[in-house]
Image (cartoon, rainbow, N blue to C red; front, side, top):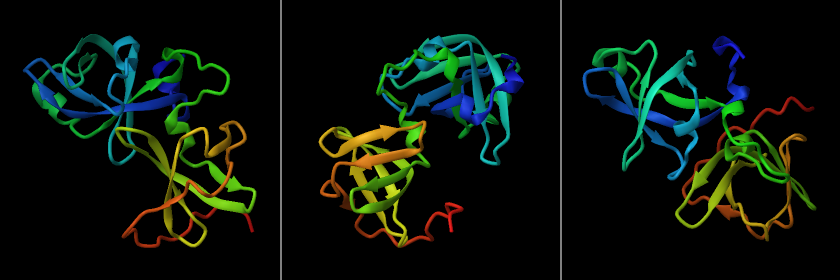
Length: 191
């Protein structure tokens, strides 16, 4: 697939640029998930600026560091060019990642999914929160409140990314986020 054909849905966010490294244009990338190896295998990466502008760049060289990965990318050849990318998100094309087994999913694919239980609609996933002991989804409820649901088998009946839905076994695992101000509910386009 040509680099310009890579879109947000065809790539998976894997980290962010924290700073320039050295004088030759290397970028220091901090992975979103410690231990992630996606940057060590990808032949190209997608850099996305805060304004949504994306650029797909081939990886020339990569090095693992204690805090992340150093990448030298085609088209970034000096410190100023590297520094200009500070804060950008880094994604890799899905095709460069290992194929998922049945029932597996990437956490980033949960954002935007509808969450339901036997009692009805819970809300929509607006982000994934990672804690040392468990990952959790943050759900915006129809009333505008934010709640978290730990991603543990005991609370999840089914995660169906293709259908766009997470079904909870019960609402017992939902945790209110203290101090979270109500927000406008997500417009789902349904009447």
